[in-house]
Length: 176
Figure 1 (cartoon, rainbow, N blue to C red):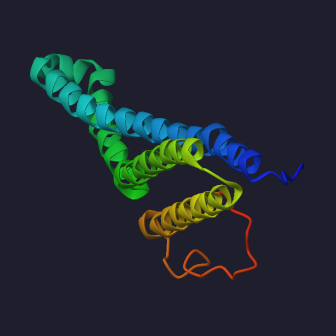
Figure 2 (cartoon, one colour):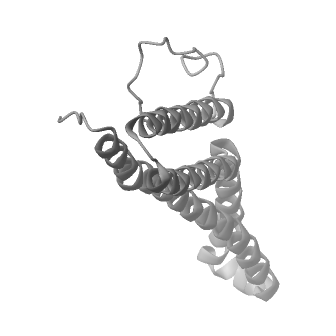
């Protein structure tokens, strides 16, 4: 890994890293949770509607003569209940909100960093902006990690996420 000695180049590299690694990670995470939430919701809704339609259309004779119909009327509500339970247990909606919030914050941080980069007048200003950017990203990652642990099933807020980093810790770690 090359370490830049020019503050402007170091800041530019960090902004690029945020744009190419952090922002896409939040976008993918949000998209994945949106798909999970959509599939779960549709499965629960369609299973309920399907059961009602089948039950309404079935006569006593078809119900007694056609075993797959009886099975479908029993299994569809089970499928809907399973989908609803999975959505509730995984807390997909809350996690989606958390990741979407993270995506919005990292997008704002990157946009602000680009504007600040363009207006930095000297190396001292550039270095200060770089440190502020690192702190902002670190705060976001810490908040995401802590909130994830509070939301996730079996999660706990009493983790390393609450531990304040020492002043010698300068490496940002990817949160959950």
